[in-house]
Image (cartoon, rainbow, N blue to C red):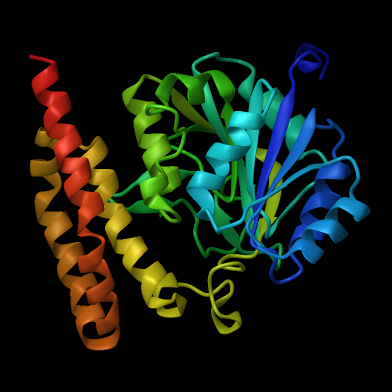
Length: 318
């Protein structure tokens, strides 16, 4: 690690203060062989007692309690703006890092300055099931986690380029985040939660940055720990276990990512697959989650806003 000894890493953790997840996460950060420059915790718990207990137990961290729940995207913006590191590790609070995670991922990302984001091997809490070995853009223009739900049998032990990184444990070069930010936002706050990682990855690709997978950097994620009912933790097909509001976000944000990042030609090429995907999803929602439709319609303002902005950007280039 001598070659990376001058590189600093800031860790940004977003917490809602539920499930008892934060302490194991912070313990794993404290136990890193390559200690971070700083650990910034953005606290959306709205519970002063929770914040005080964390500060007392972890006096070295920087904790910033919010008066309202900013959700994941805006909270990450808050933490990144406060950070001083050359690299930023963004974490869900339901993630635990292997002791050499930062060391391994720094070593793996150092070979190319255009690699702006990196993912380790993210396993589920059983430490046997794969959660993600890299984020990809599917033909349906949805987020696809490579290896999702498969048993880890060593089939993803080769490092290599990927489209993007899963937001649960996302490692970014600060230079890249500064390069791709929109106004003062690194993550688009209109996403709130879900697909914000695909949007950043897609945007980074458009700006010429690359993603890289480093299998030796291992993390453990309780899939859905902070957003699903207990019965849905680590279960497939997430939308079954989400509230109607979060279910509407999941749908809205896929469209938002497409509007913001897709080229006209690629959209036409993938349109049949997109329509097929939408038919399946909307059929399910119509019969099993009709309340999601009402909330989705209220969120159309975000899609209209993105369409207006894209139209302005297209005409401004002429």
